[in-house]
Amino acid sequence: MSDQTISIIFFVLIIALTIGITVWASRQNKSTSDHYVAGGSIKGWQNGLAISGDYLSVASFLGIAGAISLTGFSGFYLSIGFLIAYLVVLLLVAEPLRNLGKYTFADMLASRFNKSSVHSAAALSTIAISMFYMIAQLNGAGALIELLLGINYTLSVIVIGILMTICIVAGGMSENGLLADFSDLTREEIRACLAFAAEREHNPITGIAASSYPARTWLW
Image (cartoon, rainbow, N blue to C red; front, side, top):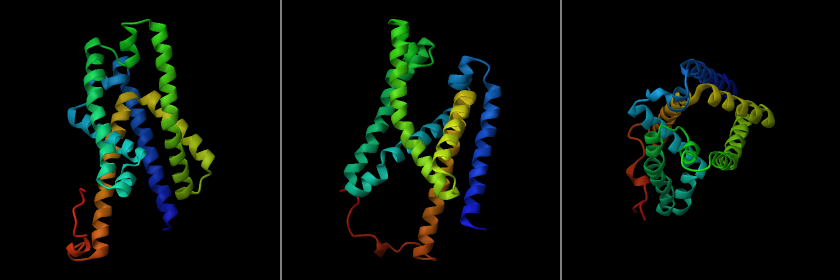
């Protein structure tokens, strides 16, 4: 079995799983609360896995591994910065939203200020921010699919963009949370497999020898 065949099989399985979760989640969405907050049914450990998955995704987007590789411990501060930002969002955004019974930041502001102006500004800022993020994400997805599956880059970007839109609109928070959990667990399993394979490659019995590490600290 060729590498491309294996890539196609995994790709089809992941797409099928994504569509299956979306179909299931769409049937659970019977109210606004179900769509935005999964009806409050998401447990703490599920939310933790989802946040971890999003955190790792953002870390990849911002190039944390490259920053640490190039600048050492100084690059690590970048990852700490947006980790702390999660706490700020929880305190300044999530709690007021919950207390007011709102689902979006724009709804929270609209309850205190001019409704139409706030919603217009929120829509424009959301589109502007999402464009910068999604262009890089779709570009990476298209390039990866073209490399692994041999599918045209433009077609790959269009298909992935349509699939993402359908999943988000139809599945809501239930689908988004489950996919984030799945992506986080998948990343951890892949890391474990790569670490094990690297150790076996260096030394089939004991793993990487201690002498292969430089005699200096990694922190400075």
